[in-house]
Image (tube, rainbow, N blue to C red; front, side):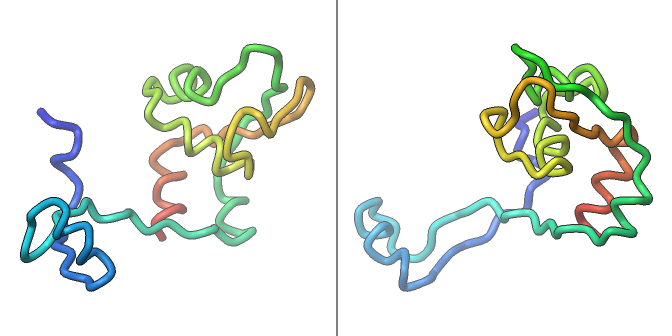
Length: 112
């Protein structure tokens, strides 16, 4: 099963993409996957999530932590988002990060 089956698609007829449509010989529209809309949660929403603290060390990666805590490397971005750290390069040894323990609750807060 393709991994994109659950995403909505949209046909983009925007004038902005007209040159791209011409290059690709698409006269009417380009098909795009819809971008999920997430928001920055309030302090109360963040406080509602149960977390555990973790001390960042050499060799750590968000995807490894996602696999350890969620059993799925694809949710690395939840840990990155929660800590305001878009990449591992923004963290140094000894930084304390927080990992939301319940993935479902974290995703609900993101899409609220």
